[in-house]
Image 1 (cartoon, rainbow, N blue to C red):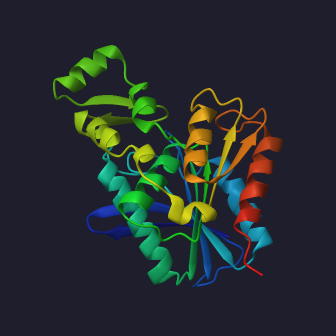
Image 2 (spheres, helix red, strand yellow):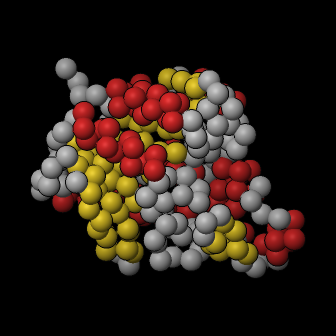
Length: 253
């Protein structure tokens, strides 16, 4: 079962998609899925994960949503604080409306960075956290999307447009916030046992060394996936990653 819905609160409208084996009103376990930069809740990898998760654990549900300025979201300018608000609203919906007792999160790339930022700066509501190719050095990764001409405009206080399938406005404040929220300066020891990071050895977008060093520094389980690129385009390698995450999220005996 798939259902689109919006969370309308605090001046925001978060576009969401619920995956579940049955059309129940409540779910004891919910996995929140977050996509990467330029992606959306309708990505095929989210669909595949949700189908396998809810097929194996038939009373679970999966919620995917569009980050600000992505997918069907209405906002035009990317603001980190609004990303935090979106995740807060989704967590609140899972707890208060769907009555989740345990919330898990599976995040990719930009979504992985935002998840780490959320845990460090807002709090950790998640029972377990799985990250695939997280953007550990998000400032550098985002800066690479800006041309030198546009960077000069940003330095003068102007907005510029960047993006992939969809363009979004960014400004100096975004890059200042990315620099201030460098997740490498935080410690994640308190949740390290409940976190896993997977990263492809052939990732040319986000260096695997970033994830490996971050995992080692925080004593987090690290799973290198031989031959996988950033989006895990090889279906077999994507299936392997999904299997590892679903097993990591398995109910306690």
